[in-house]
Image (cartoon, rainbow, N blue to C red; front, top):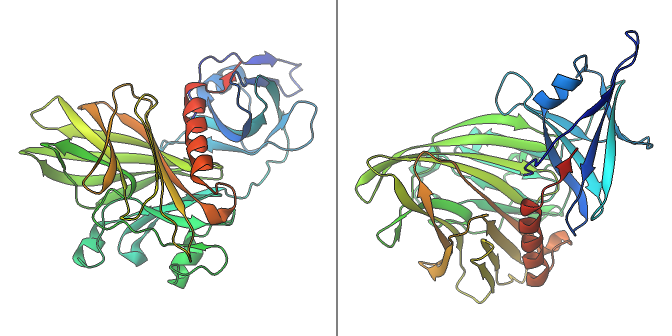
Amino acid sequence: MKKLLFICIVSTFFTANLAAQTTITLYNSSAIDRSNEVVEIPWSLIAARYKNIDTNALVIRQKNQSENIVYQFEYNGQPTIQNLLVEVSIPAGKSITLQFSKGKKPVFDPKTYCRYVPERKDDFAWENDKIAYRMYGKALELTPKENAYGTDVWSKRTHKMIINDWYKSSNYHEDRGDGLDYYHVGFTLGAGEVAPYSNDSIWFPKNYTTWKVLDNGPLRSSFIVYYDAWNVNGQMVTMSKTISIDAGSQLSKVKVDMEYHNANNNLLVMGISKRALAGALLMNEQKGILGYWEPTIEKNGTIGVGCIITHTNNKMLLQKGHLLNIVSYKADTPFIYYKGAAWDKAGEITSAETWFNYLSSFENKLNNPILIK
């Protein structure tokens, strides 16, 4: 989630029989405390300065502290390491220094997870220590009464990974202490899905057809789903979506790659399914924040849903049973946004105010990434 503005790795090299040491300073220039945040560091920059690093015996600690920093090598589906991910906390306006050393490589409990679910009609599900989601695959189209399009929310109130247990039980529509699935999707964009927008209409694709896992925890899980070409107001469109989720985040990052045949500039729409009963809305075109605090269901509680795009030309409206944000899209150019949800019974985000504040803070962090020097 974090863009790097500048990097300078300071290394001190010892004699040949001693391991090199590298320190990396992380600086929080924003006015917001950053707690348990995942920071991404390009591996090529580390390897260039720390040539003898042993990835099988790497320990990372905050300087002058004994506790291990949780980290992950991110491959992005490639055969070699692309990024180093670290989970850190940095107060507003402060910095911390991380120090590499050689030692017994720690084993970290997973805080994110994703997988293809063939036993449930080609679902693809992903989660972290806060929330879980799923999207629907081709096999579900064979059962029209069950079929749906948009992103589904699984409301959880445990830091443990629940996807495998819930699918194994086949009884995840009932809360047995760790949460449940009660979010309704149907033929809508659900919790922040994206689709082409043309002639005042949403042009839904069918469900995804193929998939590929890129990374799978402990701090980030990511995957790609691909869609068959479909007709959008007279032109054929193909699409893939790369989705990632970081530990501690309510929102997933989505990179949309879409190809319009015979066209260059088009419109896309991000949307949130709106319920018939009253709920609280946040539609901030200037900051690109779309938020919804759903009407409460007495037995199950309340779900908040949100979308964020750092885009200057947003057009938001209520239409066709959705909260919509319509934006321009240039073909063959990746389109990046964030979508996610929260559940009040998880005990952290318990009102429309706290949910909208979370979305605003998330947008602020996107525009003020951790600096690395």
